Image (cartoon, rainbow, N blue to C red; front, side, top):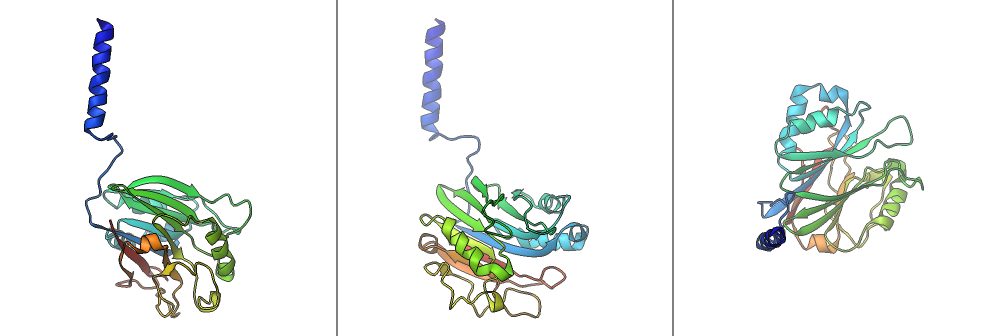
Length: 260
């Protein structure tokens, strides 16, 4: 009798799994038709900025318009500034990379993404045994309603931009929807995009004549690169400048919108 009951229960479980298409508790559904991905170098984001409530409210209000956001130049030894920012955002999840840097000025990358989006993989290239980067990149893999998205984020060392981009090009995957974005320092005296050959077969969205800095410089340091698969889903991109002064950050926020 017990064996019959057990067999019946097994059949019911199998039927329910088939009926729901293998649904699991961590599956989510993203309700939008497009997805907006952003990067923002917040310019030495630490305890001082985190203690400024007006500034933090501005950060949160800007970030809230995007689905996946990478935050750069987090310099905060106690590691409390970024969690404080994340606590101000509803329906988002957050994580950070390892603190990295060759000097006493250690930085982290922050990742913020909507709860409707599944993060399926997070790879931190720190520790960097080959010493290829000042601030080693991170790789994040997302699943959005069955579509896979791979994003690499890096803040290059200005006087070694060419070398660090060359090393990054050597580790990125080539197939699938792949994005490279961040403060690449890929302009002005640090990098000549017309002369150098890194990521030549990728689609550079932020052009050389654009300005991604809020300071007196006129440089396209912050960039978004799409491989051809990701570019096939491209809809729009831009540089968010409204309200951003040097007190808020010396960099503007950059973003790209893809079709889902």
